[in-house]
Structure formats: structure tokens, C-alpha cells
Image 1 (cartoon, rainbow, N blue to C red):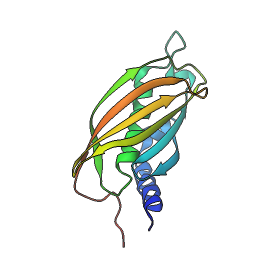
Image 2 (image 1 turned 30 degrees about the vertical axis):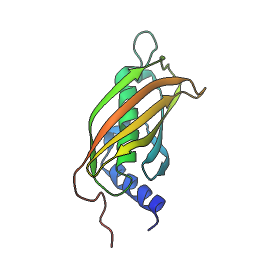
Image 3 (image 1 turned 90 degrees about the vertical axis):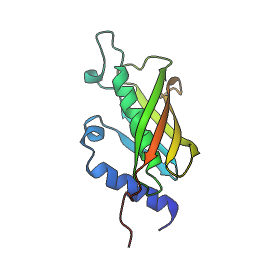
Image 4 (image 1 turned 120 degrees about the vertical axis):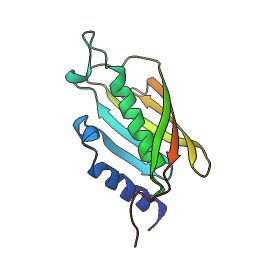
Length: 142
């Protein structure tokens, strides 16, 4: 299996048990080795009384993109820590794209940077996730 096909198979396996991403309407639009793009439309149930998206929704989107990227090489990994900076508000009906890329990877620890933009390419948030590999594969290969 080539690296991109393996990355897709790992994401598909992760999505099988991910009811949260499905409930939030997340879609993986790109996946490659140590890289993932995930989209999510901001719905009425995701905004506060000011019509601004709750930060937790944006964090969840960025965290999911980070998780898909750090599991893309068939090494089960967890996002063990993260920080996020909110730079602009996301609003009702915005379509957000979180793009995650590996910044550094050692044997078991990794750092992944995620940018979250809206459909106008306005930067909404910057997320930095710290991954920890568990030492088991995401999928079994024959």
C-alpha cells in the first residue's frame, strides 16, 4: 500500500468509531502523510447569542485535523496536549477548514500545527498539538 493510501485507510478506520466528528458534520477533504484537511460548516446549534461560534467547536475541528494527521502513518497516536489562539470570530454559516501539518516528529512525540480558516481564507485560529505515539498500528496490514 502506498503512503497516501495507507493514510486514507488510517483515517477511514478512525472515522468508524468517531460519532463526534460525524455529529459535528466534519469531512476529511485531504489526507496525506502527516497532513490533513478537515471542513465543518457552522450551524445554528454551534453559535452563541451573538451569532459567534463557540470556541470549543473550533478547537474540536482543529483537534480532529491534528489527530488525523498524526495517525496518517499507521502509528496510533493521541493528541496529548494543545494550545489554541483565536484570531477572528467564526459565524453562522461559515465553512471552516482546518489544515494540519507535522512541524516536528521524534520517535514517539510530535508537534503538529493547524490553521483554521473560513471560506474567505480569513485566519480564524492557530492550534499547536503535541502528539504521543502509542506503539501500536492504527490498522493491521496483511
